[in-house]
Image (cartoon, rainbow, N blue to C red):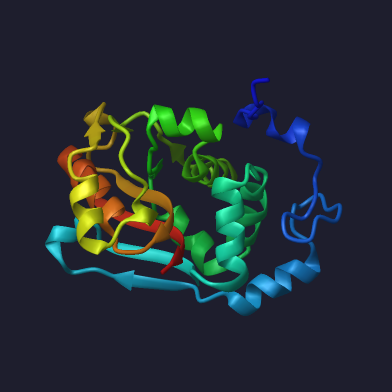
Length: 220
C-alpha cells in the first residue's frame, strides 16, 4: 500500500489545532505551558557577518540545537509532523524584536530541497515556515528563484569538509530580476557548518540584492 503524505494546503484539514509539543488542543498550536518551556530555551541572537565569502550580512537564530529543540526539529523534518510549522512560527512571531527585523526585509526565500527529497518527505520544512512567516508579516514569499537541481547525501551524515564539497554546485538561480535590489531573508532549519546557506546565498548574490540575511531555528 502506498503511504500517504499530506501536501501543505490540506495540512489544517488533516491535523486538528493542537499544541505541537504536548498535543493538547490549542487554536494557536502552542499552549501557554509549552510557550514558557520554549522561552527558557530561547537564545535569540543576531550575528552580523563581515566575511565576504559567506555572502550574507546577518544570521538570526533562536535556539541552540539541543534538548527539546533538537527533538522538535527532528520530529518536524523526519517524522511527518508537518503541522509543527504552525507551532514554530507562532512562537517566533511573538518576539517583538524579531517581528520588527522581518519588516525590514522585502522577500522571504526558503532553502530548497530536491524533488526526490520533497516527494519522499511530502513537504519542504523550510518552505512551510517561510510561507507562514510571509503570510503573517505581509511580505513577499518567493520559492521560485532558488532551486536545488540535484539530490545529494544528507548534510547531517557528513563532516565539515565533506559538507562543503557535497553541496557545491547543487543550487541554481532563476528569475534573478525578481530579487534585484531587494532585501532577502533566506530561511533554513539548522545552521551547523553554514555550508548550505553559504552556497544558497552565493547564488542569491548573483541577483544583485540590496541585502541578504539568514534565518534558522537553531544553531549547532
